[in-house]
Length: 215
Image (cartoon, one colour):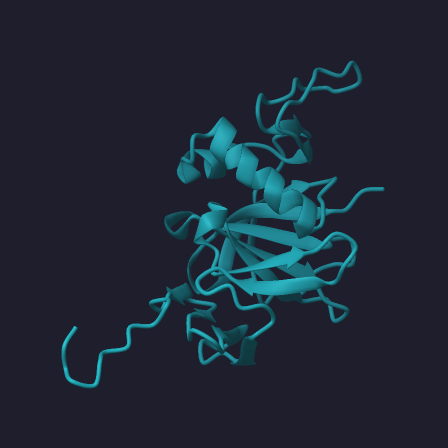
């Protein structure tokens, strides 16, 4: 079953440029694949990856696509199966969207970051999650013991599920401003729709000066 998706590049003030991806995936599946494509195919060159994604509409993405006799176009090595050249979509995060689309994946090239939006029941894009293409740059990660519930882990101090999450309508006029912080070490990610993520990693363990003033 197809999962109609848009994938492309974020622009200023909530605008974006994207291509159609017929068989998209949920972030749990597509984000790891895009990270591998970024690393293995494009050598962590985000500009090159963005240009290649915007060169075609796509049936599906794959790290090692094989020729298929029913495809009208040959696969793109290290990237996937193109559908056609089609038309590039110029969009806006506040736009009304039709019921066929399910996901929107946008590269923030300068930040080497991928922001995912899902189609809400009201026919608007709703921010779902943000992911650094290099996973070691993520401040908070989701982990789970085998068979157990998912946990949010702070990569600075190792705190589990000790997270404050605040979300308010953005002063930019669209979207939301969010603040996610670790209650143990104080590290945080503050996000707004215009400037993206600002990550603050606090020292850990914390530096506690001695009472006599010596270091």
